[in-house]
Structure formats: C-alpha cells, structure tokens
Image (cartoon, rainbow, N blue to C red):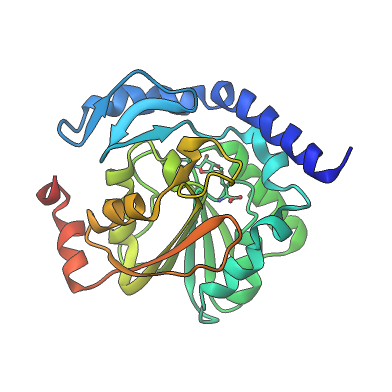
Length: 262
Ligand SMILES: C[S@@+](CC[C@H](N)C(=O)[O-])C[C@H]1O[C@@H](n2cnc3c(N)ncnc32)[C@H](O)[C@@H]1O
C-alpha cells in the first residue's frame, strides 16, 4: 500500500472512531452550551460537529486519543512541515511556551530543544494524551517539558506566565472557545504571541473534514473578539494557516473583564 493510501486509511479510521472516543468530552461541551447565553447557540450536529455554534462556526468534535497514530504518522513532518512551524515561532532560549491541545506532543518535543533555559507546558484535556507526553518526556529526557491537565474552559496556566502559545489543529475543537481564549490571554505575558495553526478552509484540496478546518477570516474574528491583535498570516505551510497574534495593553482589558465583549 502506498504511503498516501495508508495515510488516508488511517485518517478515515480516526475520523470514524474519534466521535466515540471523544464522547465524554463532548457530553460536557453540549451540556455546557447554555451556560453562557448569547455566546453560543445550538443546532442539529453536522457529521463532524457537536452542534454548538460560536460566532457563526460549528465546533468540531474532539479527536480521541486513539487518533495518536495519525498525529504521529511518519509522513507528517513532510506533509505539514512541522519544522517550519517551530522555526516560525522564533523562540528565545529561555521562553516559556504553552502547547495547548498538545495531543501526543508532536510539537512539544520539537519545541523543547529550542528553549533549553525555558519550559514547554503541554496542555490537554485527555489524560491519555498527557500520559503519553509524560512517558515520552521521561524516556527522551526532556526535563523542561511539563504535562498540564486542562479543562474544557481553562488551560490551568498561571496569569502572565507564558511568552508564547501554540495551538496546532486544536482550537477548532475547543468546546468553550471564548472561555479558553480568555484564560489563554490572561496566561500570556504582555507582548506575548499566540500562534494559531489550522488547516485552510479556503482550500478545497486540503483533505480534511470541513469543521476541522478554519478560514483566516473566521480565525481573526474569534481571536480579535478576545482583544488579540492580528500580526500576520505567514503563508509558508503546505496545508495550514500560520496565524500570528499578539497580546497588547488593550488586550489585557479583555482578559480582566471577559463579559465585556459578549
Ligand atoms: C487533533 S489533536 C492535535 C494535537 C497536536 N496539537 C498535534 O498537532 O499533534 C487536538 C487535541 O486538542 C485537545 N483539546 C481539545 N479541546 C481542548 C481544550 N479545551 N483544552 C486543551 N486541549 C484540548 C484534544 O484532546 C486533542 O488532543
């Protein structure tokens, strides 16, 4: 079987099992949909969605931990140019980086050697993902990697404690995107950056289910809603946007008063 076909088989398999694997996470997502009236609405779920709508976008289901094989597929580095993502973050050696929705740590372990005097906080809501990260961290001796158990609303990071936040193929799954982003902004130091990497919804040739992709316009709308300043979209990846945002003085107002921008 060619690697391309094998890839499609693996992708199709995780897309089939993921809704089941993620049922526990989505149950809270749906039940939590009415706890912020005006922010979210509910509709009949699409095939790859949970039926909860935020700023005109239906939120996708969470990829379950059985999708690790797909996240760690051999061809990924070449297909997605993970190296360019990490390089593009231009990290200082002592930077504190939060990899939010870290999964099995595909990016966490590529960032770790770039910040020898810093730290990588690998945040996920699935304990199974965090166990894999902890195990890999011990085996590979990555002393600056720390696994952090997040909740669907909060990554559990200290206020103004991180220099950069990376979210690769994860944000579109957040069941409470406004609450998550408000907490993320609070955790960022002033001047800190958010790097948002999502498959390009504008490009029909990118072979990913619709709700697992985002347009630049939608991503900017949602990041600007929490006061982040758009810096640029670096058009350097084969299939994904590499969107850069910054926390400014005025962003801080949003993180202090999350209700203000409803
Ligand atoms: C498709 S995987 C991507 C993993 C990793 N970023 C990568 O590119 O290899 C998305 C991950 O986001 C996590 N996730 C979903 N909602 C989350 C939330 N609110 N907070 C933290 N992680 C979340 C899922 O558990 C899953 O591990």
